[in-house]
Amino acid sequence: MTDFRRDALLAGCTLGGLVAVLAATDGAARPFDPVAVGLGVAGALAVEVAFLRSATVARLWRRPAVQLSGAVVVTAGGALSYVLVGPAAVVTLCWGIVTYFCLLSVVLAVGDNPLALGRFRR
Image (cartoon, rainbow, N blue to C red; front, side, top):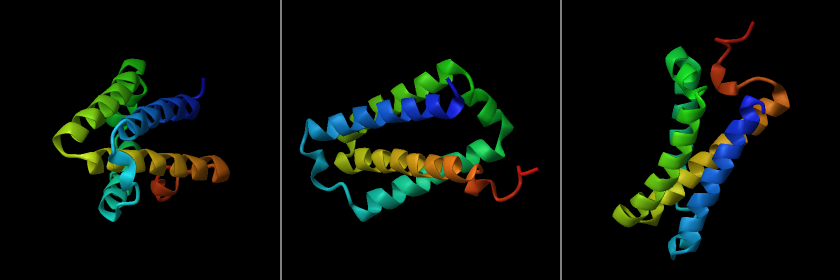
């Protein structure tokens, strides 16, 4: 399985778990809360830049145990954050994953990550 397919599968499973948390509660009432959307988008872009800028972070992410643990932590953390903070925290995580899928679509369509800013192009 290619890296992007594995990452997309993990992200999709994580998003499914988070949406299930929202669907099982009244949390899906405000999926377009502007603060949650903004924080989710900004957070996803910040994580992507960290992967692009740090060889250590990228190397660690290639480990299957780290990838699976990341998906589990985000899903479980989302459920816990729902209890502690409320549905906006889960909606924020969902928007972060949606942003990842949008970025992945751009990368697959054009063959390059727009956040790389030319640094990694040859």
